[in-house]
Image 1 (cartoon, helix red, strand yellow):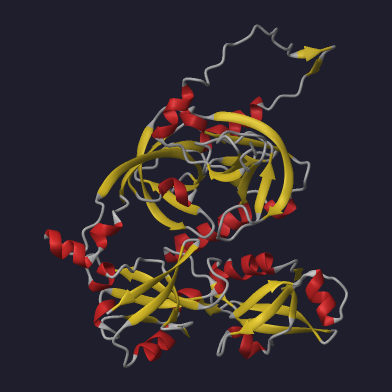
Image 2 (cartoon, rainbow, N blue to C red; image 1 turned 60 degrees about the horizontal axis):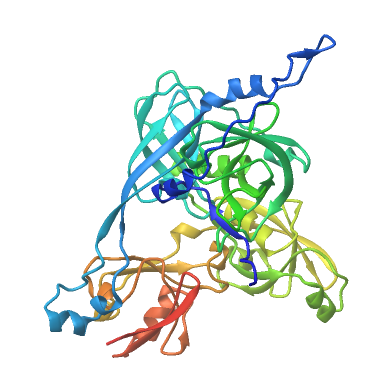
Length: 466
């Protein structure tokens, strides 16, 4: 039998894992304690480091509700009418509970960094401090793209915070310590080294620049601290690579510089306002270099320039190879997407491109991804009433081409009954490609029957609306 391939696992802890704990109690073997010193020389220990930083790491327990999967038949209008079911009947809500970790970064204000997937769907949040106190908390803001969230203790008092380190300065081989609450075992400490930097492709989408470490990270460690030997926060532990669901020595953390950038935007705006360059890109591969008659090199190949975008206004052209942003080399499309997506709309960036063998640097004023046009669907077609559409850019990382984003769908609305869901991407209508709400409106005009091609998660489907 072929062994199962390793997978990336978000390290949130859920009650379903309780059944695993019974097999995890270890019988302590008798070991002689290490002496405090040998020949008068004190042995090195991480204990002072842990004593100083441990109180800033908290455990997080959440309760919430999610929409349970529904039977597709119960969403069919004909089935609903035949059996007298209310329109838009869904599978119903169910309660969920989970646990993870968090890091206090502002003791006075009670701000805590954690992962988006730890507090996603949370209606109640309870944190437990190192001294045993339990406090209520609320979500200030959350960003699924980077899997970072900021929560706040309702009544902060006598908290201890951790200082940010510069994650751009860490190197492969640096010693690190991970602190969190694996399997609900509060304030567990593990140590290891930085195994690799700049890891991408760990999850299906999002903005990735992970620190890889062999410090043990397990379910429940999500949102916990990865610290250097100076006691500085250099990462937020997020995911593991595993066949069994447990640690095999490959864990991933969001770099502290990325986490802090997202936190600053959440605290200022309540959300992340990503910059938009307005290009479709791919890696500049050896095959592409050969086709261009060029030597192999790092960079991102511009495949499309969106009309009216920051890229077009800056003079970027199809076929350009973007090699640097603000002087920092771009190794490929993922790095370019991270570099632009983590900046704010309105920021100026210097883009270095290679065109016809010559380097050129242009200045682009980034657009605002969140401010792109939003269209209410009620007037477009009766079957779409209740939906809200916006523009989707490939820089968001879910799909490689511009499309129409379903931003929201009102419950029990015609759009919901016809099968549209929030975050669906509409790529074509009646075989006509659509890349923004205006193109969708133009394509709908005069059409009685709509056949929408939808990207939902990692699958494509057709929805017919009359």
